[in-house]
Image (tube, rainbow over all chains, first blue to last red; front, top):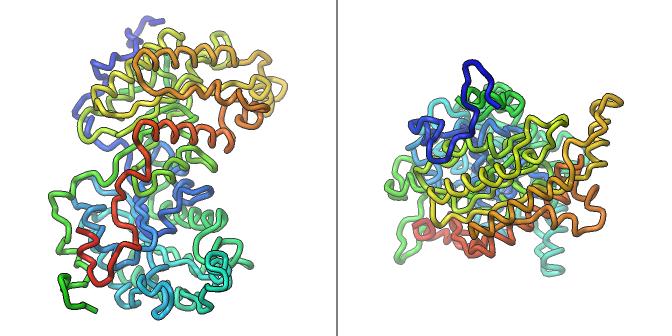
Amino acid sequence: MATPGSCPTTAAPSAGHPPVCLADASETLRPRLVLFGDSITEQSFRPGGWGAALTDTYSRKADVVVRGYGGYNTRWALFLIQRIFPLVGVPPVATTIFFGANDAALLGRTSERQHVPVEEYKQNLQKIVNHLRDYSKSMVILLITPPPIDEDGRERYARSLYGKDARRLPERTNEMAGVYAGQCIELARQMDIHCIDIWSKMQATEGWQKLYLSDGLHLTPEGNDVVHKEVVHTLRGAGLKAEDMPSDFPHHSKIDGNCLEKAFQ
Amino acid sequence: MATPGSCPTTAAPSAGHPPVCLADASETLRPRLVLFGDSITEQSFRPGGWGAALTDTYSRKADVVVRGYGGYNTRWALFLIQRIFPLVGVPPVATTIFFGANDAALLGRTSERQHVPVEEYKQNLQKIVNHLRDYSKSMVILLITPPPIDEDGRERYARSLYGKDARRLPERTNEMAGVYAGQCIELARQMDIHCIDIWSKMQATEGWQKLYLSDGLHLTPEGNDVVHKEVVHTLRGAGLKAEDMPSDFPHHSKIDGNCLEKAFQ
């Protein structure tokens, strides 16, 4: 199979004789995009999920790493950041921070243990952002507001779980989620970082309550699609366009069967 | 908010004063499952994809890392293994090796540049497995045979792309995919590693041609579901049951708001 010329050998490498310098071996093959948040992040690889879609959008370009923790608020999230973002090693190129749905749970209702006062929510987000800035000055940091709440949907969901024993008073309200969203947006403006106002964005579409939310809080595939599109749009605006990022190995059509080493140099 | 007792402080940590020992900081939070293969692996995070589903199955337990390279055969894959599996650092707990659909492309047809003789295909798989064993003696190594081929589906797909200019002779046949699948199974037996015979498994269901294959070769959501279920079944059989693996941080219901440090020790 070898042809005369500059590439005399075409045999595949044996596993014992690496064609790639070992000095490269410990380098990260692809940059990382970290998704840090609550259940809406944790569930983002379920069917139609925005995390899975993001993985596909950045296929062969970046690794999407999911760090979603269902039920967590920003107070609890602060305990995780030293482990998830340890300030050593190669930092992620981008991180989404998607908290607030639990912080905004109302006092005196069934989810009050997750409640964090809105001033503290903002301060906690600021601490997370500052920690990420300590890790990397160039990291794209992307805040996402809590999504809107459909109180009727929450009540239907509670009744489906607990029947007539379900509390009639909502544990979350859309108005309160909006207060937290507002503080998230203000912080992003103050710190000059990116922010997706998913609370407003979703409500701009007629019928958002059932179209985007499966239980009044978590996302349908259509709701996931909105988040995916907004995240990609923001990352692209921040310079992370998948088509401009290097592919970790050549496209198969670029591989010359008579000169394999060249393709994999 | 503090209550008398053994846990006097309830404040969240400041970002500057880590609650977690820095000696832990560079430790991997979650074990990794690496998916190494061709387009059927690369595309596994598209809607309904088996990679995304696996990520959700091992949510909070393991990171699923996709290393799929569309169009690649095992000869080209050998050039990647030193970079993807560099024999330094923490090895994956499990790796799927899913090649053969391109190796089995026929000589003298439109995809012949991807063809690898079946004896070499088997040898290449063996080299990959040996390399992974050099990396880790305990890694679960899981070979997956090429999927079946629906020749009518391939022809319809070619005509949809090239119209009447499409070649009438198939570039892949189901019979030839079966020959490669047989060698994959035999190697797994010889090396005493796990193997999923997806070629046979899919054909055991009536109407597999359109049910499981979108273009006679790549997978529909239903086809992805078969792969997902088989991979999970095999991993569980090898001791990787998600419910028995440690969660990287406590479930939110286990967090005592009056004693946060305890939850995150």
